Length: 464
Ligand code: ZN
Image 1 (tube, rainbow, N blue to C red):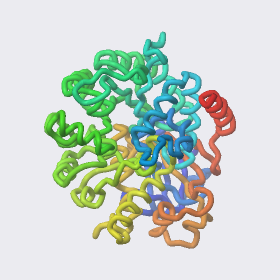
Image 2: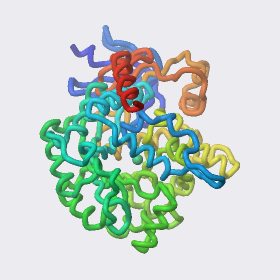
Image 3: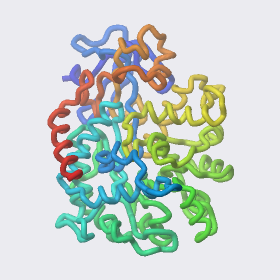
Image 4: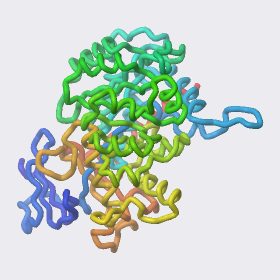
């Protein structure tokens, strides 16, 4: 029995770097019980990893249903000589999708998405879930129907989840009434807490599942409703919010509230390590310093932010101020933490015309610094014990293909650079373990074919 819950790795990436001959042991609940480098003689019968072992990455921001839209909005929808597409025109298209999704369709899309995440090396996801009601805004018989489908999809795929039901109350600053096409999202603090209670009773928290909340944005809640929402939660539950993705929302916040969004939030609420500020894209120098000091996590979703034309987060100044961050795939135009980290660095290179901008004097390899920081910040944002190969953390890890051209013949200190920056052929991630279960074996998830077939049916339905 013991040998079934153990794995021997010739090389494993521990919190202080690569080590040789590492024996990993975990319990039946999927928690690491021993991590022993320098194990010269593993117990007889211990399985051996097919390549170097490194921690799985938490994905701190996801809207599962948006996976079905990827690649379908890459054309100019507006007409006229000065037509420009932007976040807001994209959002109109996204709302049309949101209006059509069914419980079965959502389950199929989410399960396929989570399989894609696992194959890409994300072993946890924070789901910022905002489609709650039927298309006319009335409640499902089980008011938590849609959120529960998403939780079940995560559990079926094997990925760990932090479910964050979204409070969407208003359509804009100044408590503006919701739009017709937002009816499926709308709740009050009390009705959302009630929905969360129903969900929690049906699917209790476990090592693989944690609950928090997501006030959608400062556009969609008021100070009072945010206070009421937080008052109904335990004091450690994760709180995620879209904060400053668009300059138009920063301008509207300044106009109606008299402060920029990040400053406004920091001034009025006790923002600390339970908070994740998603898309803290538009922050001034003071906000950058203050956000870093708060110990909250900045949720960066670089592929989505690039795809939507959001802007560039001041990553150099923020990291220099010891700011915490993690990465998310958000709209799922890409599902790959390696691309998120690469783009984080490349945005800085392109604007500064320098290389290795996000390295530091202590961490000279950019990929290693960004990986370590995104793992720690991502784990903090999940509110779950998923911060790498350490006793007490979840048994979540990736096994690299030692023959992949991004790392073959390289010394271990160059492996993360190859994994993050090289874009050659198939993924270097060969196997994936989540909670001690091998869910991806030689680049295939155990349910891949059936889940993909269901995804295609759901997608065809949405596109009718
Ligand atoms: Zn989002």
